[in-house]
Length: 325
Image (tube, rainbow, N blue to C red; front, side):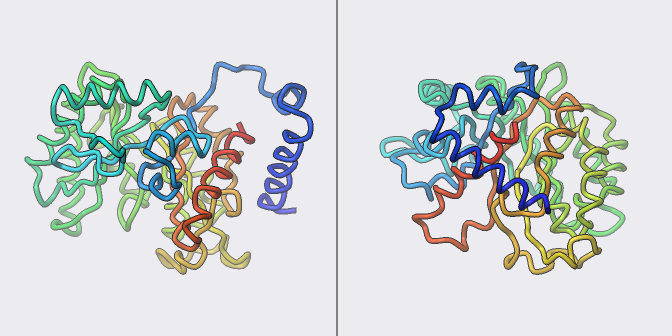
């Protein structure tokens, strides 16, 4: 039986069992093989999905799907562009705005697990460093440990890009010197999904403050065969600071072939509980590497579904991850 079939069966048994038996004895049985309760990762969601849930505000949306954390998108003007509220707009631009965001997150029991920057380093390098410095200050104020960054090339092409990326990486890590804040480069596009590029970038920067926002689906999207993914995950596990939990369900004959980058992605992207990627294995790999970050749902298949179904799907994804933990 495939991983998908096994895990879907287990997931729905858990849901049914919980409904029939309550949480006490069932939870004890499910967690008997996980004696150490010290490792308790936060389950989170990207804030870009929250408006699809139909809640009154962003905090209620996080709780409605059973999550306790959120990754917050921040633009170069320091606006939190996807955190919605009927009376407020959230920002990192002033000390008063930071205090408001901190207070609202704490009062609602939601942890900001990462800030997300969408960078254009080779188009505006000095502006990007200034933006990153402001993000680091905000992260200190809100006790956010990870800043997701984007090292995709734009203006600079070919062999010139790697040395430029190394120089920018060094400028970034200098901003977090003597702090516990880390940068997570998301593996995406045609550059940072290549381990040979990541290796040279990490070696060139030479700092443990620069690691990965591991997007579990993007290496697969790039074309890496399914069986090769887990070797890549193991290779970088000690450098993973944050995750995007995403999956794809390819036809069986395509799973362990080298596919063209992005092949049929819109057709085959799916919720994580329906995909080819073994999240039990991912969790095991990261736990063995002493991972201390979150598991953050990013579902790019939601556009296939009616609006009224999207919250239900996200809730099922959070519950699926919880069942594996």
